[in-house]
Image 1: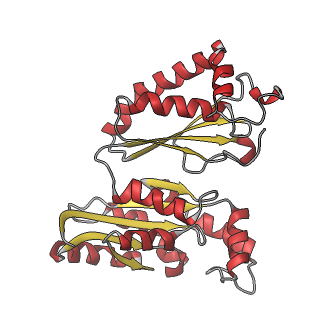
Image 2 (image 1 turned 90 degrees about the horizontal axis):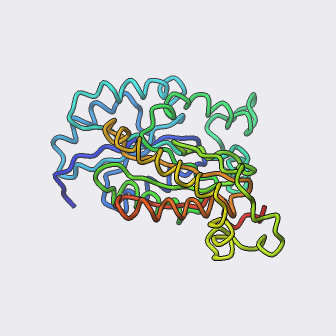
Length: 289
């Protein structure tokens, strides 16, 4: 497959977060994919891309190349002498989830040795990659994503990437932790909670009984209007700053009722005038609190 569009996607993140899944998905979509590339070779790769028939390249760069080598990646990306604007994808997951994944697969973490346990290696890796995470153009938290869900996120955000900024609304529960991939976070735990009505507890923000309950509350309407106005006010500034992705996260206690309802309402509202919206409910179905 040939294309005139030149794209360089650099994938990084902690071991066990799903980098191989992303690379395989991009390869299936027609990208030339390279795993475990030393950062120092990126300038040569960009020069090669100028002569390549397939100008869509994805490379995975992480601590396997050495902890010293990985630290210079942000500077190398900024200094690339080319028209190519690299996209840096950073994958992460909760440390408990990463421990479970390594225990299930029995794979060796690249930083484990006689002096570092698996838990210590996972923590150290996060420190080594902190600068890369800060420079990422797109972050994906894979803690609650299945392999298929991660592949679909990659297809939507990278393979079928729309022109302009892609806007995602994400609901979550604070009791399950803050989302690592959120750009804006709104706390709606101050709103009336349907959970305390035993007749409503089993429903979610997608169900009509919860919607009817929350639509009657003036505070919910005020919160919705304030969030909508804030996003509408600042969205053009994010677009003008060459942002490709913006994730707006709405959090309540358990991620079942208030956050789900407001996320659905906001997504539906912006979808009417903004064609690049997506929606995700991180914690829906985990519990009913």
